[in-house]
Length: 636
Image (tube, rainbow, N blue to C red; front, side, top):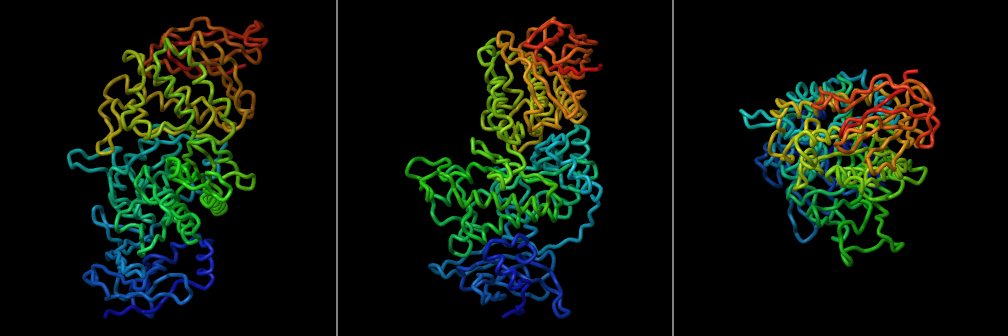
């Protein structure tokens, strides 16, 4: 039998923290760690498998033979198996062969803490370490300001596999190539952040990355872990923040993954009513188990610490919060108070956010949460879940429903476009037009717009103009920024050739301009989460389908007047009530020719008069282009 030397990276304090669920740097202890022990080079292995009676490391260094390298079980009841194997080094492939105490079950598992995995469909873990030298000190020093809730926050959501492909080679871009092409594009477009759909290792491409088997490993599809760090570094060099989609809600049943890990329900809840997700055919983490909570929180901190990530968008929070999520009567059991809330999961999310913000106060956690659960983005000490922001799914649904209607009918649905302002300041909301809105027969965002070609593109420009002037941060999925015509297909590259056509180029130009406008105007971001930042002028003009409002900064001189004409009929000499006298100038018009608009209705110097309108002492008249957003600002 090959040699395994008894060795441990765990102190007694580590073990106590792990058992109590309070060890948040488990990646420093578990997994494979190349090191030198008594002048012998090799690798230390540690895995949690309390249901096992034997655990061995199998790999390309022992011909994948069981019983060759048996790990030692700790005496302290922690369920940790560990040992040092000489001559195993960076690049070696391995798995854990686990003989269970339960029904003589034998499993072969990838390392839950592996820092690199084989390229799918291969499933082994890879012994790995890197000594990447970060160059983003300048970014980290100003990250608190750039990530602030009072800063412009415009996110470009990216699926790395399908953003752009090398068609002649039938492959996606590598991390290395993305560090040039994606970074330069995002900078040119003016987005402040990118959000990557899950890049943790996943076996099944059609899952888009949301069924994870390697929680600590960037997917090998695009290169090595240090090359992903290089991509993050290049984004930071160009003042672009990086958000990762993070999936603590469920994981797949693949035989090499976390499911039934040691022959028992180790990571998943043993009760199928709480441990199995009927929609996604996947397993749900057991949030009541201390070691599982520590695993997940350690994973979140791992990406923030080791990869300098600036934010985590937490997937499917509603499915975590509610015991009856996507379940019929009789398919779920209430909690101890007879309610449908998952109390252990809620406690986990609170603990997660407290630890993230304690360790990294200059990052953001963002909840993809679709219900009316109260206090998602309120601090834990105020009774909230502690997220920095929450996706505004209601705004997305109402807005897309409104814009899909023929303009002649919009006057009957004015409430759809104004209702969001009745609750927009109850949370720190991010306005998302995400990947979920351009798949499964929903059409592309452009494909939802009614009318002839000119009207469809004008509608889309108006939608984006309304989005960027509505309170809240912004998120736009790849392709939406140039009016992708077809639904997103994860197997194909975006249709970049569409930029050869003026209407699509116009959409791209309006997004560039809106990002620049958002960054340049404090009224659009300084008070984006508080009522002080917004005031209606008029939301009642349903007959003309026109809405008008004021966006307010900390200084009155920064305030903006926003007017949206939601029909293709130009509104000439349209009177708007104003807060004070003075001269206004037009600072944005989504109907400009460079945006593929008509360019016909441009407001130059606009003087107010003492003409009462909209319950205000002053007003003016302007020309509002068809299907357009116009922004005005006092110049004197």
